[in-house]
Image (cartoon, rainbow, N blue to C red; front, side, top):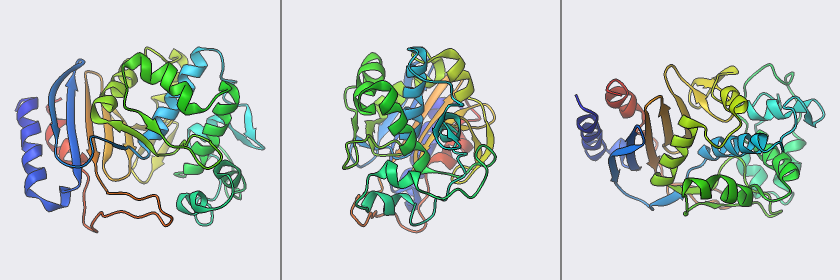
Amino acid sequence: MSVTAACRRISAEIARDPRYAHTSHLRVQAEGSVVFDEHYRGPATANVFSVSKTVLATVAGIAARQGLLPDLDTPVLPGQTWRHLLTMTRGAVTESPWDTDTVVAGPDGSAATFARAPRVQEPGTTFRYDDGAYQLLSAALTGVLGMPVARYAAEHLFAPLGIEDAVWWHDHDGLTYGFAHLFLSADSLGRLGEQWRTGTLMDPAFRAEMMRAHTPGGPPEGLGYGYGIWVADGYVMAGGWAGQHVLVLPGAVVVTTGDPRFSLGPPAGDELPADWMPALGLIREHLLPVL
């Protein structure tokens, strides 16, 4: 089966099965050339949710190349280093009142609130999916960059890649959200995927560490975890809630997005049915064997 035939089969499944009804886009690039690109529904430029974490880690890699990033074992908070934040191993509580929706809806600055989360595990020992780690990373990066992360990314990441549609929200303190709320099109995600594949803008040593699993990882993707990216056998993946996935293989980039019709609130809400499914399973079943 060819790549195009596999993509058409996936598209047919998306159209046939209502569980995939929130799938928004499928884009496949092979050796830098687009071989399949179809938009199904929803806005063309949309919230990529936790794919923002991978973009934030990429910003850190660019800062490292420019000599702006300190040694990753430097503490950001007592006992919590840059490396702990990047690998989500800071060992802090992530449940309410330190879960994301509660913190974002609260009156205090998001980074300051996440920083107060009690420590329940020794930093560096255990992976816990942790939006707070990436908000603290955004705050730390803002300090060393001397400007908001969103502005630095616009100048040093998006512009060099020809990305013109990026919009990155910030909290009420003006701090760029590090864990989500970056808005991009599938085309822009494909351009970022090529950057993750080639690494031309990042410090080479940082990129090498970014792309390897520092822990076995865990939910929600069930893969090993590097610096803001999931590490599988044969590919790495940026992943976000509601079906946002960018799979990066040695010779290809696969982008799939979803439209949950999300509202930040408060309270946050969406229109995903209980039995919804991301298109990632279809990608793994039909496309990855061909690629």
